[in-house]
Amino acid sequence: MSSIPEDLSYTKEHEWVAGLDDGRTVTVGITAYAAEQLGDVVYVQVPEVGAAVTTGDAVGEVESTKSVSDIFAPVTGEIVEVNAAVVDDPSLVNSDPYGEGWLFRVQIGEEPEDLLTSAEYTSLTSAEA
Amino acid sequence: MSRSTPLREVHEALGATLTDFAGWLMPLRYGSESVEHNAVRTAAGLFDLSHMGEIFVTGPEAGQALDYALVGWLSALDVGRARYTMIVNGDGRVLDDLIVYRLATEEFLVVANASNYSMVARELTERAEPYDARVEDRSGSYALVAVQGPKSTEILRTLTDADLDGLKYYAGLPATVAGFEALIARTGYTGEDGFELFVRNEDAVPLWNALTEAGAGLGLIPAGLSARDTLRLEAGMPLYGNELTADLTPFDAGLGRVVRLDKPGDFVGRAALTERAALADQEAGPDGTARRLVGLVARGRRVPRHGYPVTRDGVVVGEVTSGAPSQSLGKPIAMAYVSRSAVEAGGLAVDIRGSHEPVDVVDLPFYRRSK
Image 1 (cartoon, rainbow over the protein chains, first blue to last red):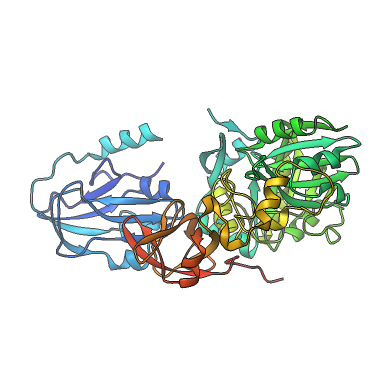
Image 2: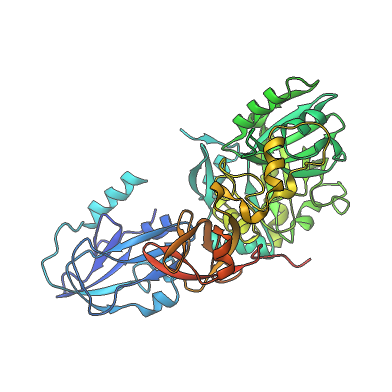
């Protein structure tokens, strides 16, 4: 069973969103569950800093030995920072998905909608498993 | 509902990610597929391949029956040796690729892919009809466990008295391994030295455990289908369904050498393959488009995958059949059918979800072990 931290928000596309309570900038990554499903991540493409993104946009991709998946913007806003370390070493997504494996930060433009609580995400992943 | 191999509970206890493969629930990986891949390249990996099909062909005319049914010259095979061969239809198109072991003068073992072995058994039965030979699909009774990698011999030696040094590549030897009756075959699908062990279903778990124990100090770890696929791709080995399909002849796949037009008698596909062999390579190919199978190495980090178009100056000139990140090269690699003129002209790219990423054509295999 992969970990699902209680203090984060989640999407149906297996991304996590941190920092919603603290202000206007949130951090985004993919969940431990998604990382386990993907297997060894070998390539991560993140959006460019300054890009305007809308919830649901495909803004990057994460590629493993067996598959490739889009990364979707979980919120609407502007990309203000990307994780260069994870681009250099994509295995951080596997080894530390909620920490050093974060992908990008977004300055929120609109109030986020449809994000899942950890309890909701837990039931989503147990239904898939 | 997928079928399970006799080793399913072992895989589950090891925490494997299981996946449906050709109707079988198989281990995709146990932990990190890169670690499993590298273990096979540097030490050893243990594989469950029990989804493969085992078809026995026996009788005084078993060799002649196989000469008629397959493209190879199996009646000329020495007892104890094995051959890579194919079964084709009347048009010379590949129905499956096979390994055939001659176990005795009148006994052959045909190993077929999981997705195809029922069809292969039916075809063999039909084609062997005029011969004094009997075809029996015993896939349901046999398990197949492979030990692959440079430490394979050292590991297996602790469990058997069989003469492993005398066992050549593409040879098979009936023996006792860890107390169980087995056929030890020096074959594999990884590009490394190694063995495939055919045993009865009920012996699979204790054999697996004995191998695990024997290999514990030598770096042996269980390896799943994901590692198997990247290992075979680096070794330039074709996968049925990707590089080989029922649309292609063995010549199209660059494997015309398996077609033994020099053997006596007729065989299924002979007329079509004789015609195909006579064509200059430039004039033929899948759907007459003069393509050939090549190796590609990507310059960037995005991975060309099965089905992606190969392009030149924005024009589609081929298609990727298999692709993956290569541990051994540190770059994405792929096999693809590409038009001969485009290969010669160079400047190829692969359309990776809309962006044309440059690739270089290289000789296959991508990886060759040092002897």
